[in-house]
Length: 330
Image (tube, rainbow, N blue to C red; front, side, top):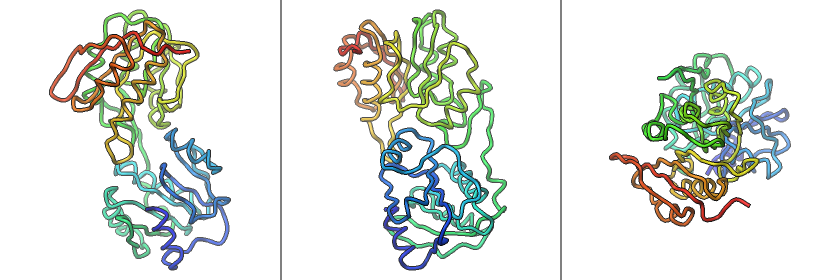
């Protein structure tokens, strides 16, 4: 979809790239085809580890930071408005004054509203519509400084940032799981998909914990976790939870897995977290899990663990304790 719009915009002359200089691409996702752009000129900025690793495997230059003074930028619009605005501001700031900033997104990502908001501040090219989305461009300048990303503090004194999961405060599932954890936990624990650190703090408050691996794929959330969790027992890992392997088998995994891939619900993602947790645990280890009630995880839990019990529920969530993984970590 993105490739079709970019190709049409460039081929039709609706958007004209500068003849030379670096082009930064912000937030490309797996499935995005960037073939319309010269790969040798591109620097991709992506903080979500699976997407980051995907593009690196294709030979792209990928990093967490945006270089300054680039000739042009492409913003692949995320759905969350504050995150999208922050990316627009960063692209405009890191592109040379008057340089080209291209914005591309689906209608479901809010591209129409974003075009209206930008057009109210600066002139834009006429938006080109294709494949249920739009692409347009504007000249980089200082008109978006008030959109710059700002950390903010939520209940409990935690720091979050635009775009991270549950940026306005702890989600209900995590709050339920934190309350359900036993007063004592074993020595070595993994917080799998840890976000900005809410569950990690609850884990560290329990007796018995000597080491906690905090695993998170979103670099922005992990940066927040480093601010929120200051404890020598913690090791922070920017990693894909589905492939992360601790140094040695652990005693417990605590997990509130995501169940969306981009815009679409994907129960298979949470099932992958459950299987990954089983691989990390020693033969007598335990998984503490919270998940939306409607998600079909029962079969996966029964396949991955010898003991499975429901330890709590409410209208939206189910809490599960699963122990003794069937496939011990080699």
